[in-house]
Image (cartoon, rainbow, N blue to C red; front, side, top):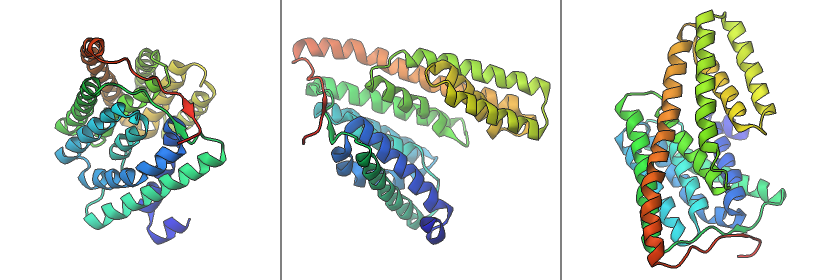
Length: 298
């Protein structure tokens, strides 16, 4: 409420996203490492807000992807990944002053999210996998290329919300970090089912209030289906399309949103297909990665 009164909606959006980045990063990387990268999160969030959604934003996402990939050399991929999140999901602004304000409040929110997660027992440090320099370089180039290509696709096609293309890449990379490779297949299935269901609603032609009620019901059901990811994501996609679309544009919204998400997944799969054989070949010539483990020390 204080930030809203002082800064307005921009401040509220920045604070909320910052808290999310702090919480997610603390879960993946530990609270101490997130403290170290909090200034970086604020800087890239401000740059992302100022450049969204033009070709400089594309370059920014590519750079944050490379930076995160380089983190594999030191076991810091997870905390640096939050920088890519912060650059992708922003509130666009027109002035440098607003961008600085947005970035600063995102950094404050990130720090607050870290404090909250520490109170809930998040580990101080989560050690990540470490790879040799050649392997880390390949990962960095592949991840940066995938992030840049995803952003470029949305900008080139003139979409008003091009971040929906890199969104599945970032979400699935997070799941890959947690060992859930099956999420890629389940996200594809869920997206297709959700978009198809929304197109069926478009044929029926519901009234605005009925469409909103159906979207709310689908969202509630999605929360209840967390144990089965493809069902949860299918319901989430269905709900999202109905929320974002006006009654006459449901079919168009379903097609565009489904294509954006599936395109992002396809780019991620392509990146993984390029990375794996090269990384395996280099790994034979270099020491094996040091597998990370959760630790409470520095």
